[in-house]
Length: 160
Image (cartoon, rainbow, N blue to C red; front, side):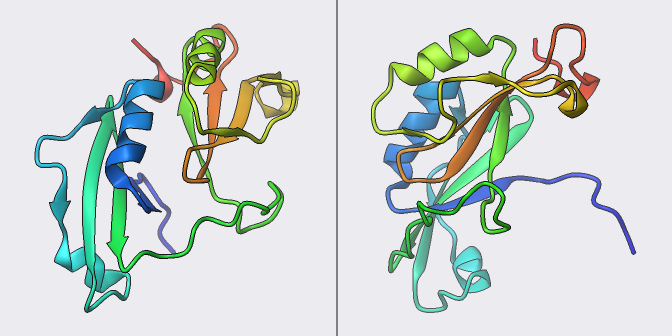
């Protein structure tokens, strides 16, 4: 059995890729990748849309890439009532150096929904003592802002 060494990107199936891209750009500082957006027939076939189309918009934040894939015909929305302990609850974290500033920036934008109650929370020391805030983007995808305790940021997550 081989172990996973790296993810090349995260792909979010969405209804309005360009609108969701603007949210990620404004909320977190993502940047568009030059050839974005484009029609990707190979990806459409991969996900079972042999007669459909997928329009992809790719964004990067540092070395990390997310792809927003708008399908035609459109798919189902991400289920909004999946609890965090359920295996269907799939999310990714965006590591931030300043949780207060990142949370304030997010609060200034419309159409997202909090999952965490009461704002960012410091998690127990057994989890690394990180500060976390879970929320849903405007299309309902769950995400998490994550800030490591001072001096405890793993090198591969170091910001700046």
